[in-house]
Image (cartoon, rainbow, N blue to C red; front, side, top):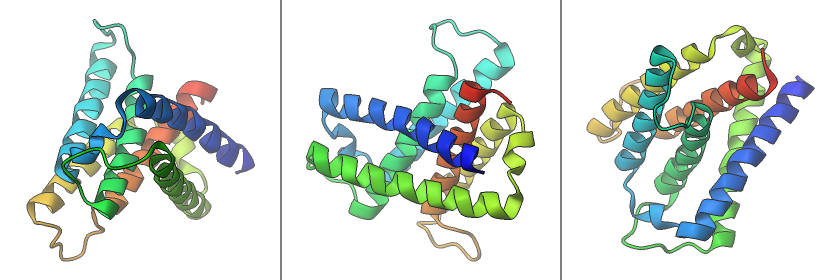
Length: 180
């Protein structure tokens, strides 16, 4: 499990680094996005991953790894948007945006540790294509919850689905970076 925790944190460092660089270049322009738009951005990335897995070739030169990183970062953006609400302009300083990023990255790590305990690292036996399918399923669940304005009968909320998307993406990145 220590390897998993360390690998998880190393992957999250890569994701955070890209997030920070984009924050420098664009600011927190994503603050205008409603959570449903964030969900759709994640859908685009997950669909591209699945398309590349099936076709086996990319015509734009980027593989699936950057898309999984994008899902991690958009998942965290989604969690931030759920907490703060969306707004009409970039209203976050770089420091505050990174503080919120770190809060949700830690929450994802804590969730992974708890689930890893209960499931005995079952994720390590799964295929990356299964993570893609599970992420897509979580996206469609999220879209349904959004359509219901969050009024579910027995389901976890949008935030739980974003957390699962983040964690499945990190698992895929661990396998891509460190192998089976």
